[in-house]
Every structure is written in structure tokens, then in C-alpha cells.
Amino acid sequence: MNSLNRDAMVIPADRLVMALQDRIAAKKVALEERDRRYGKDRITIGSYMENLGWPELFGYDMNRFYSDPEFMLETELRQRIFWADNCQDDWLPNLHINPTVGMYFDITMFGQNVWHEPSGVPQFAAHPIQENPDLNLIPPIDFHTSGVMPDLLRQHQAIMALNQQRYGGALEVGFPTFDRGPFDIAIQLRTYEKFIEDTMDRPQFVHAFLDRCVRERAAWNRQRRRYLGQPEPVEPATYLADDWINIPFLSPDIVREFALPAYREIIRREGRITGFHTCGRLEPVALDLLNVFGNINYLEVSGWNDFEQLDTMIDPKVTFGLNFKNTFVLVDSPDQHRQAFKRIARVRKHRSLSLCAQAIVKLHPTYEENLARVNAFINLARETFASECGV
Image 1 (cartoon, one colour):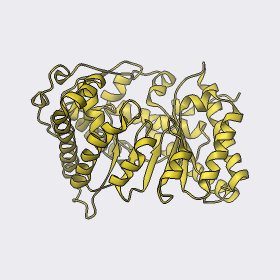
Image 2 (cartoon, helix red, strand yellow):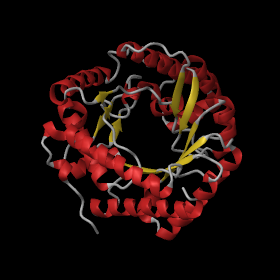
Image 3 (cartoon, one colour):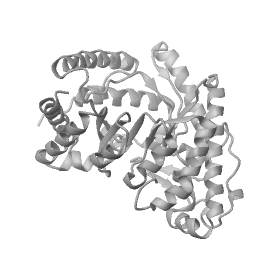
Image 4 (spheres, one colour):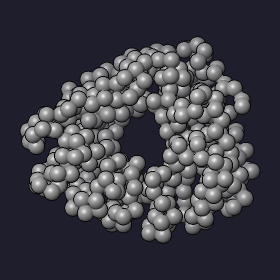
């Protein structure tokens, strides 16, 4: 088993952007060679480390990552260099940096306290609405002051300053978008069990709750554009990620009765939905969702779904982003992988798609073994696709 390249951990901080630029240039050469060997129309294969995988590898407390802008920026650059040095996927590293104070920043704006263990695992305090179904318990949301927004804005300003002072403006500093869907928010605040009870006992409350989430999301995204000095889009569009669209945890009837009206309202307020993500299973409601989304371009298909069944149901003009569970990537046998790749190759003959070995964590005793398994998965996929469909 090859040892890991750990150069990213010792590069001087003031040379990190230059080092990342070197990796980007080298990866471009590697991708051009793959294009020549396998064709530019080949199935691309990406992968990434789940954020919970980094603290142990690099030896830091996730709370420092979220609270110290200088440390966050330096560590993010080191992690990108490390991944470029050790993963043989097709994704090109970039110089775009988003500030982050945790992936649940949007949840905190609705009044829920979220904190993190040193390993990065989030913990959630009970929201008052959990015990009392009263929307007045959700405070008015202010872009600048709600939840952890003051921390996020401070980090954004600090990273922009560091980019200029340390790296001469070479980085492209972005800002998070509010992509989270209303089911994720409502179920997190109310809890799953009580939300399900609400759909039976208080349907009007559920509709009002989801509508509140939709309105706050749209308002926040407008404020984001104003904060960044961006004009209102001529052809507005948005992306939607709602992990609780997950059958059988939600019945198809619940999705049709409650989610579809909320999604229509998102479209009315924010423009067409270009892509949709859920970590859950969606085959029983896929056509219902697509009928609402209309001319959607991209559908993420999680490892819990039967992508071949979805392929028979959905217009081949919709690109599939196929995601494989990390346990499948890291534990299942090469023969099982190969059979899955052959099935993907059959779908690829009439549909554009990409593949992701997602959310890699330290499942096996060493990071060396985990990364070796990821690379074996990626290389087997590449060779199988080449032999099965020439891409």
C-alpha cells in the first residue's frame, strides 16, 4: 500500500496558494491525458473527504476551523493540496474559497443553537417550537444578526483581507448560498416524530411552517446579493437541497401534499430550480417532483436510489449526478464495484452523467488504506467505463 503524500501539512503558509496553483496546473495536464486516452466525453469520476474526515488527519479541533479565519483559510488550502496529491479523481481543484462556520448556519438563523464537537460532529439544542407548534417562536430573521451570521460575516471580511494581504488577491472569495429546503428546516426544528404527527393533526400549521421557511430563504438570498453588490438576475434560478425528501421516512402522500406546494412557491419567489439534491430515496415521488421543477438540468441521485429505475422514468435530457455511499466504495468488493460500473455504462449510452465516490471518512484503521481503496474504486471505474462504452 502506497504511503500518503503529506507535503500539504508542512508547506509554509505564505506559499500555500502557489502550491495549490502548481497542483491545479499538474491536474490539468493529467486530465488532458485522460481526455486523450478515454475521450473528452468520458464519464468523470470525483470524490471528496467528508468534513468529519479532516480533523483527525490534520490534528485540529473543528471549532478552531470555524472560529479562526486565518486558520480556516490556511487549513482549507492545505486540505485541497492534500486531496490533489493523494486522490486520483477527475475533479480539478480551484481557488474559490467560501467562508464557513458550519454547514448548519442556516438552521441557526431560525433560533436553534448548534455547536460542534472537536471532531466536527454537530450537536443541536432543542428549539422552543419542538414543544409548542407556534411559529411566533421563530424569531424574525435578519441577514446581519440572526444566528451565527455575525460570525460568518466576520470570517468573510477577514478572509477577503487575508487574500489581499497574504496572497495578492489570487483567491476568489465567495459566500455561501441558502440552498437548504423547507423540509430540512422544519423537521430539524420540530423533530421528525412531531412533524409527522403535525401532517396528520395540524396540516395547516405544516403548510404555514414550510411557507415561512420558503419566504425566509428567498429573503436571505436577496440580502446576500445586496451584501455582495450583485444585481438581481435577469433570469432568476436557484438550487434546492432537501434531504428529508426520503421515502419511506416521508410517505409519497406527504411529499405531494406538503412539499410540492412549497417548491412551487420557491420557484415563484426565486426562479426555476436548476438542480435538486436529496440524500434520500426518491423514486416513488420523482415524477411528481420533476413535474413541479419543469426544465430542471441536473438531478443528484444518492446511493440509496435505484438509478436504473430513475433512468426509465426521467427525460434523458436531465443529467444524473450519481453518488455512491462511502461504505460501498470503501468496503464492497471489486466485483461488486465492477457490476455497478457496467450498469452505469448502459445508462451513459443515452444520458449524460457523472459519478462521485462521496463523503470519504476514516472507515478503515489508517487513512492510507482508505485513500488506497478510493483510488482503486476510481481507477476500476475508469477502466470499466472505457471497455464498456468507450467513455
